[in-house]
Length: 171
Image 1: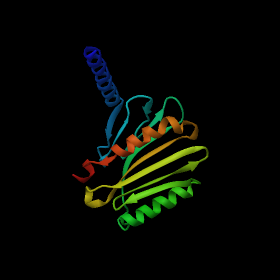
Image 2: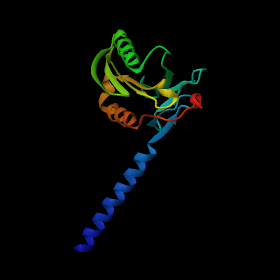
Image 3: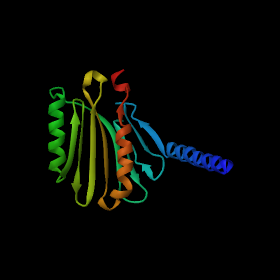
Image 4: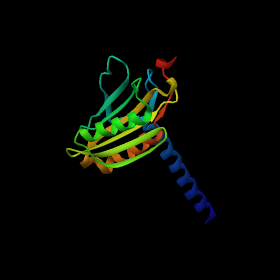
């Protein structure tokens, strides 16, 4: 009987290891060279669109639907501090006819999420500790409400992995 239990435990552990490896392989890290915005993204299911000429980030579009992921950085205006930037991004978010349904934040980050025309819009912004705190890095995800169950865990993973790395703009 002990041998069967040992085999069962070994099988369970091997399943956990395979599952963990599969999960790790399901993500790839993108880091923007210019501003250092960095997040883990799904390794498949999204296609990179042509990057903007200024090199401030990258957008990916789902091959299954119209979902989009954008990771980018931008300078704060020279006369704008972090709190003013947060306020202007919140106003911009709401001015696009997005009903804000969730907001959170801390001293150097904030999240806005809401609904717009049958789509969920999620925005996480973090103040980069690089570039004398004059850079804001952004993770923006937009997807159909009908895909909420499938994509909420993906967005949660990306948001948890989102951070600011040093970028060449500040070298």
